[in-house]
Image 1 (cartoon, rainbow, N blue to C red):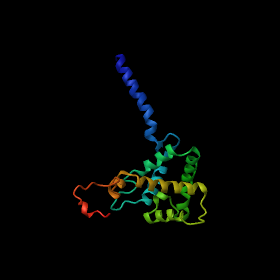
Image 2: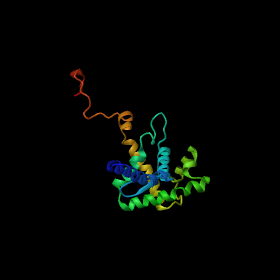
Image 3: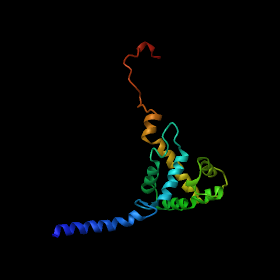
Image 4: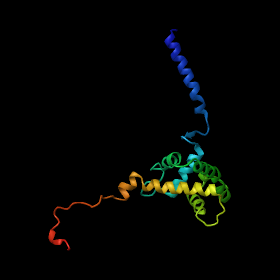
Amino acid sequence: MDRRTAIRNLAIVIGGAVLLPACTKHNPIAHFKHFDIDLDQQTLITDMAETVIPKTNTPGATDLNLYGFIMKMMDDCTKKEDQQTFLKGMREFNTVPQKLFKKDFAACTKQQKEEVLKSFEKKDNGYSKDLLSFYNTVKGLTVFGYTESKYFLTKEVVYELIPGRYNAYFPVKNLKA
């Protein structure tokens, strides 16, 4: 066996050894600059966003990848304290559907998910500050992301620059003085 073949085989074995633990993990993790999210947390945020803006005859939150927008905004545009509050609230969130329906948010039906989210809108609901902050952040960023999406700005709200279109055939006599 020559040296090049031995080095190539060694590189393949080392690469496989590095990749193997990542392939056997039960719960993959999304790495951001300031925090990590596991698959269950990603599913929770995606389900919440889809419940806030569901797919109808228009695209929903999942179709517009609002999960990615929410996580990018949390990672890049919020303070460290707000990120920690967000993560604490996210860890605490599944206690609400557990109390109401004895199951996690992901296992709830569409109507149950709506009920869970509506419970946050009630006054004196007894939820912690972290939990309310998490809910309000996800809801706010979902709506913000939707209204700033390419779909919304090109299909729902047709934007026309001011002062508007130029009409060269408009008769001057129709102008009011």
